[in-house]
Length: 387
Image 1 (cartoon, one colour):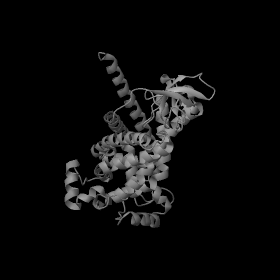
Image 2: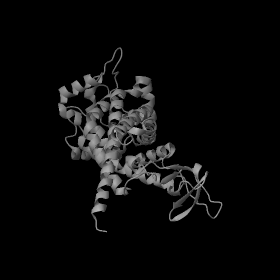
Image 3: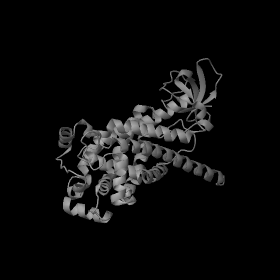
Image 4: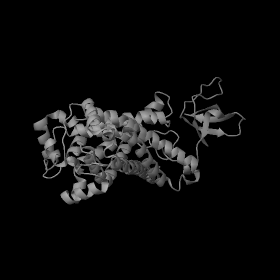
């Protein structure tokens, strides 16, 4: 039987065993004493206090958490394998949610009111906006910018999940922190997302430009967009909106990871009998819930980022209504508040929440599915290899 250490323990006698929070110990004798077990760790054995540990579930019911989890069952994955699972997850998710992303960006960049009395915006609701885009641009309009968006998602998923696994393991091995705690997941999730953002910000800017242009097109393809932006706006244009992106992505991703793993634990606590039977449904629903909570908490920063990313792109935006140019993040916040009111901070929230629920749910669902698939493939290869 195995157990997970809930707290650090320093041995005070020769027959006791020291361990750190999060360590996995092999319990050798469950009937040893009323308050102590005899256990083994790293080839050493000794007595450990019962109230410092938590018995691991049977391997058949033990589910791997996202992030380094010393108490998980199954085959451990290498960093490259985690990156592969993350990139495949990003690929699958992007194909599914691209239309919602286009709708969200159109609403975020619209200056005029989109709802309520006196609404003058070109887009006034999800259904109406979808009809307008379908009528003016065809079905392909919902996948505008899909190539840079797909490159963005694949790269982002690989860097984010690999970084998260590495950071949570470092927290456990170097700082003696519990890698399964919500605080560690929030911190590591935020830092992992910032790392991924720095790596793929140019692709995000290109994706936003493609999704926001109407007809006639300013950019005909990805190569044309890169060349035109570099020649007319300089190299730093690919990092427009980086500051609000980093400010928004840290709490957003941190909340995603911490809320997702918290909701999974809550699910297992409320429905313990469903752990193995419906774990795919659990991953999808918990991921969707985490996406909605995270998006509501950080949405205004995402809107500011989009407004700044299309600076210098006024010609293509003129067909959609009024155009604004902002001098920076502070100017953007001030003018949106003054010209559009507090409601302006939440333009496009409805499609964003729908997108967040679907994308985050699909991301974690597909990531865990690919991790399980890779782990099973390793297990099969291990069984087939000669001893």
